[in-house]
Length: 102
Image (tube, rainbow, N blue to C red; front, side):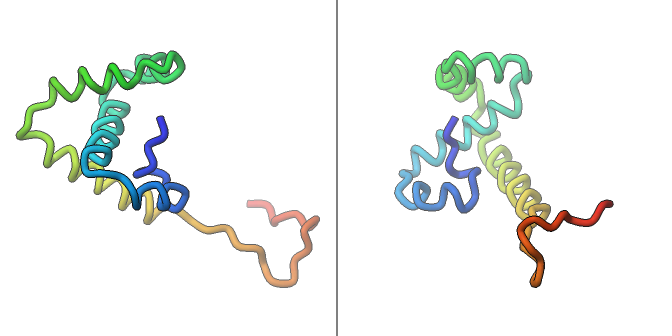
């Protein structure tokens, strides 16, 4: 779905050039993908018809609910950021060295 807003550093370059309308569209696409039944989301993504579904979803969303949708997206993004980790190589390790077991 190429939702660069949700790709972290990978989408940073593209996000710098997004218009407000494109940001809003990505937010609605993200909300649709999390609100619709998973089987429907997967089917429409595979068929490349998800954009039409997002259009329908947007028309059903009341204006009053948009701020809460955006707040929820922000909350989820913050949680994902807090939960992410960067894996760094130990100093003195070799590339063929196996990590310790759990």
